[in-house]
Image (cartoon, rainbow, N blue to C red):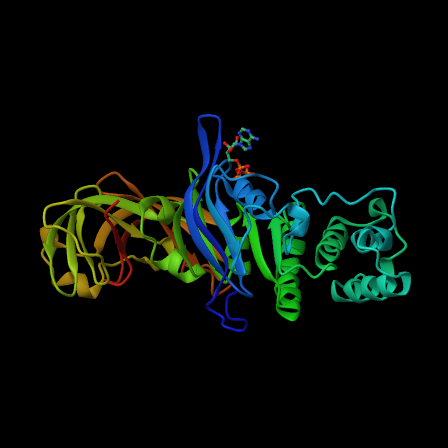
Length: 377
Ligand code: ATP
């Protein structure tokens, strides 16, 4: 058993977990620890193996290799109904002919609990998901968001120690999804249940997850907090998968103690990156710069003015080709003198248009040395 109350203890431990369907490897030697009481989000494109991983944890799918321990106990011989796990599926799978109350009570009835106790527990959980007045309705008399909360109540009523949620909010519209994300976090914190959430929606993963695991072709590409993954991706795949990124190939021209310099023909300048991995001089690397970390100006930035044009660092010239007004921010697609496009976002902090740039306007793009992430793979 892992130490209860230790926030860093591994509540779920997957070691070399593998699932093959015939010749195809859907989950490939995944080793991952999930901490007690956290919301861990598994994020990945369609077919990356997220659902298969959850189904193995729930016991619906038998691993082809590796092991799962939950709270220190080996799960290999434990059937689904004896695991301290509940899974909420992509489609909420509520019984259509049963009332909300009966839907939630179903699992407790199977356990043979007394009627009064079942009523009390159903009432409590309906209050927690704010569906107290809806017990007698049938699923078709509810909105999508309400059905989602009933499904959540049904998954929570048996007080599982581990709750597995497969795309729990996919059916909700954007506003309701955001609202429900915060509700889900608050319910999870009140009940202290450990959650693993599968989603392909990166914003959802960033909002919900204490930590994220990015999956690609059945493997975990990176695990970390949302800001780790966003600010310090370790591969081009992760950098590109999460958020928008400008990625340029280049060659390491200087590998100093405090910064690395990369000459990029695609970008048409030298990138000076302060935080970076160790790079071999002369090797090919990629620099990733997020669009919100780029300054756009009509005049050459002062810091760059002292530099010779052929030795410019972290500054390039280009022409605005496209502008998309998004309300809270605007996206500028700038074609560099090298021909490549760069994406820049600016928050619309005033209602006026005085900061705006026009299509075909000539601009300078620059960024701080802490902005580029250097990637070697
Ligand atoms: P999505 O986001 O589309 O639900 P996912 O990441 O959850 O994708 P999985 O459902 O885990 O992906 O599927 C991973 C891969 O395994 C897919 O290529 C899928 O076609 C394959 N797969 C899943 N179940 C089976 C099965 N029973 N038989 C054969 N292949 C399967």
